[in-house]
Amino acid sequence: MAVLDSSFIVKLVIHEPYSEEALNLFRKLTTSGEKLRTPCIALAEVLNAIWKHTVLLKDLDQSQVGNVLRYLTSLWRLLHVHPIDELAENALNVATRLAITVYDAFYIVLALQYREVLYTFDRKLAAKAKEVGVETVVPSES
Image (cartoon, rainbow, N blue to C red; front, side, top):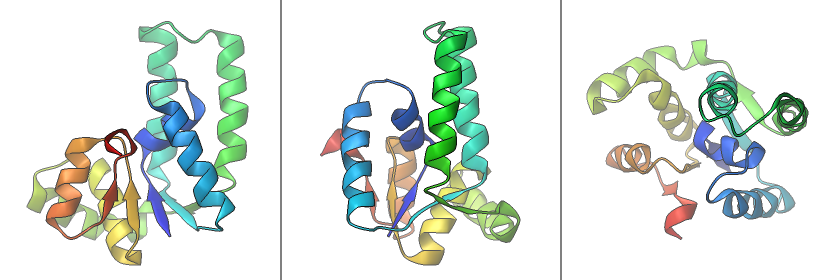
C-alpha cells in the first residue's frame, strides 16, 4: 500500500532528475498489485508543475504538453484518488502542528489514515512525515 505525492507523480509524467527511479518504482508497485493512493489535490499540483515547465522553464512545448496530459490522464486512472474534503480537518491540524503547508499535510494525513508508506521526492515533506510516524520512501536517497 502506498501514497504517492505530487513530486513523485510529476517525475512519472515529465522527464526530470530521478524520473527513471520513479518509473522503476512505480512499475514495481503496480506489478506487485499495490493500491496506490493520492489526494485529489495532487492533480492541481502536477498540472502546476506542467505549467512551470511550459511557461517558466520553457522545456516543454505544446505538442509535448499534449502527450504529458494524455499520459497523466491514463496514469491518474490507476490511482485511488481521495477527495480532500474528507481529510481537511486532519490536514489543517497536521499542517499547524508540523508548520507545513496544508497541501503537504494532505499526503501525510492520507498515509496516516491508511497506515501506508508515503513515496515522495520532497525530503522536507518526508522528514515532517516521519515526525508523526509515517514511513517514507525518498527514491533519490535509495
